[in-house]
Length: 411
Image (tube, rainbow, N blue to C red; front, side, top):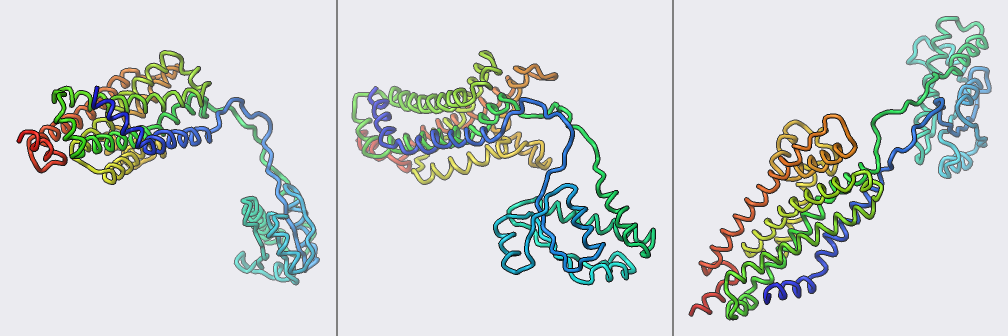
């Protein structure tokens, strides 16, 4: 076990790579999945309009201008702000109001003289930058002004108080509604599946980088020369190198899976023992893909910089096309077609199918889990075979990294 022990020493010396890519990124996946709050209770009761804070500086003092305060009072709370520059600035900057309206002098006179909606005088509005409620208040003011103009055009401008009262009566009406319990909503199991989906990135990147760095340092000329001059058979040397890669992959997959079960115990309970075992199998099979890619990079003699670049770029691409960032169903058709040629989508489909079967969802297809596992295994086999070809070529030529040591031994 000379090479295997050497690999363990190299991993201990390079602990920063698994610490960042496997441990650190898996905790990031926990934070992302935890940001989705499970829906446990249905919201019941009547719909109520959200309240807002507003202020009105009425420089006109007419019946029409004062009605804006009555219209906004239906769904908000008025805050007094003095008609001074500093007071106005403080009210907005300190978030005292969501919107501040300044009605200019002569507003009613110009409003009654307007012959079209485009001629209706504007009200200066200052919206708070820290609240979206100000945009809602702006919509309320605009609708009320439109309502006033429509009633003025219908009833005439002879009796201002009459059409103002009618406008206030219309503005006070609210649509009645209730919140119904829907079938869509996140559960504790959805949190766990979301974590496993985001776990593609730490799994792929972490395993690829760790194995690539490991094999690169094992294949350096001085290390390789020492191994080739030892009585260790070449077959045992290769077997121990592959065993080191498998140990890295198993440790990374176990960490990601166990962390998810600890962080989301309710989701694991809902998944059940059989579901947890099936998800563990999916994670392990998916881990074979970065294992084989890391093995291929190591056999090609890729250095640490190349391995880091390939691991990060490929990990981001696979997690994106696998649906970690957002659902694949929201992507363009050409992107969805491309996603089927990458392993991330098959990993996501397998985890989702297991979750659907665990919760008894109609139409859940466990057969798709087997298909997904088979496709991921084919991906791993293809890269592993390419790595074996690269390994054989490296042993037979003097151009591959580290083989001058082999020539020195043969000589």
